[in-house]
Amino acid sequence: MRASQSTAVHEAGHAVMAHLLHRGPVIRMGAVPSNERNGFTDFRHTRKDWLDPAVPLTRHGRQWLWDFTLIAIAGYLTQRDRYPETPEGSLGPDIRNAQALALRACENDEARAIAYVTKAAERLSLYTEQSIYWTLIDALAQALTKHGILTGSQVRDILVAATKSYSVKSGRLRQLG
Image (cartoon, rainbow, N blue to C red):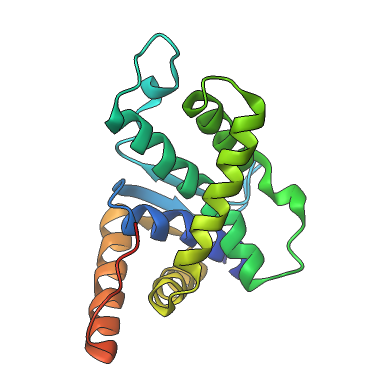
């Protein structure tokens, strides 16, 4: 079954952001509709314990929450940038994940958590303004549309090849933090 291009772009948004933030690795991803969702991106190193209020937040924990907030919203915002007609309802689990991460980072202060997610969306736009971001999105979405499901090694190989291709064309990558 072929995946929709829109869903492939959405899932590529999660994987590319994880790649750029050096989070992950992606162990598999798919853009094949199931009963509950249109696609998925699974990571090996997802530290759910940072969501536990009993676990003290370190500087590393706060960075992890920030990075995974960016990753959580990257799918929808990337899809919306490419396909402006994308309905807000497609946020679904991604926004719930981002809100949970933000609430933990903001010690359950809802107003601060909303501002945190808003700031993350603004930061994400710094990435989406870079042509390398779209080079990586297009390479991954094209493979995902063709195959429906990709293994982690396929995702890594596609991203590395697309990055090398971009580096040869432009001479350097601009790193954002």
